[in-house]
Image (cartoon, rainbow, N blue to C red; front, side, top):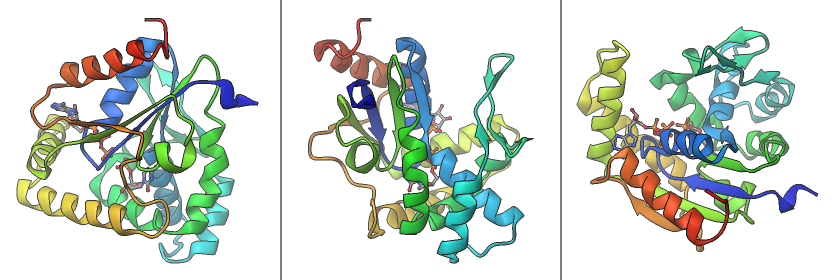
Length: 228
Ligand SMILES: Nc1ncnc2c1ncn2[C@@H]1O[C@H](COP(=O)(O)OP(=O)(O)OP(=O)(O)O)[C@@H](O)[C@H]1O
Ligand SMILES: Nc1ccn([C@H]2C[C@H](O)[C@@H](COP(=O)(O)O)O2)c(=O)n1
């Protein structure tokens, strides 16, 4: 039974910093990391490659179950490999994120990814980030964090992130995209983005990355979830 293996669930809206914080936290603890959003992005990319409609729930679920995924670390960089192809950059573009948000509303797709996500729970522990880590996938997580930030702060961060990658993005359209994505993630009927009743809410609007990480590490140590 792997329910003895500790999980820290970090949920929140797009751009709140879940991925950055979870990766750093997993590194700090020496635990595994699950970026569940990457799985939905991989379904979206697979659907695009196979010319499957984002509304064809049954076909998408079949694709989701057939995906061969690996997360190797190459020269210190985490990579995402889908059916033998390096798709690390391809899954990160805004169009793929928007399509992922669409396929993620489908219960058949969510169901197809459930066991896959739970298989990441291996010793010594797992930091899992997404929208429903604390509510659906790991409801028994030792610590649940709901990370938020204002839409303006998130749009600004995304704009800077894209600029660093050499992508010329428009701040207003990023703001609108985030609002749309938030609405879809919060309003879907299955596993909507909600703060679990037993989650600790952290608003990172006025906190830097070290500030957020420091707060979570304090919770981890106070609760005796990990040694250091
Ligand atoms: N507290 C913070 N202060 C400033 N910048 C931050 C903070 N947290 C994250 N960032 C930056 O914001 C950007 C978005 O963060 P990240 O990709 O981790 O968000 P996310 O919630 O995982 O988004 P998504 O759900 O869309 O994958 C990154 O460039 C990251 O470095
Ligand atoms: N546990 C999850 C993770 C992600 N999604 C959906 C919602 C997002 O719009 C999309 C991409 O996620 P991101 O990489 O931006 O974190 O996937 C979800 O529904 N449940």
